[in-house]
Length: 237
Image (cartoon, rainbow, N blue to C red; front, side, top):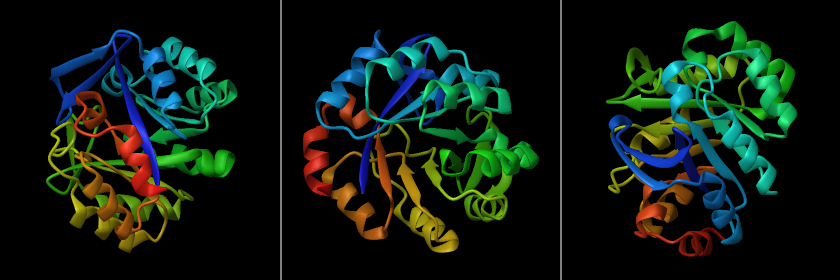
């Protein structure tokens, strides 16, 4: 299982939100590039980068910062937030970004997902963000009636082969992941799933590993010191 530090970017800064609420923001660094280099130096093998402004507005707003992160580190990046066009995906992949995360587009534009999966294969990851069992989009501000499993299965039919599952109510809370929903998703699609939201202890990592997740994204717990990256990596290695 891969441990993946999260870097959420808003207004060019490294922040964390509480349950995806843009009004409940904590700034952890004015320099996301330095933060990326820190996680790399501590042993991270991949970074999870989210353009929060892009997720909210529908187009990437922090590409300059993401470019500087990509230029500064040698480990692969997976990037999401406002990626809703083929042009944006092509630009990011041309930069050398390893994985593109499609969230809102997965709900709203199935033809785009189908084309992206056909053209870019394993570089496409579907981000499934759910609140109370239902998928949310557009920076987690719009609710749908779709369940995570329903969305995942429809995306798999379009060619998607990797998923990130986030329980919004757990994100940034330092509580625990939604183990039940995560397992249900893994069991329903049989494709790699990366867990996100509420991962805040080594026990959580051990349990997620037993569930069969491919990776775990850790955000606030690393920034508050509730869990160190060194601790996390020892558990999974």
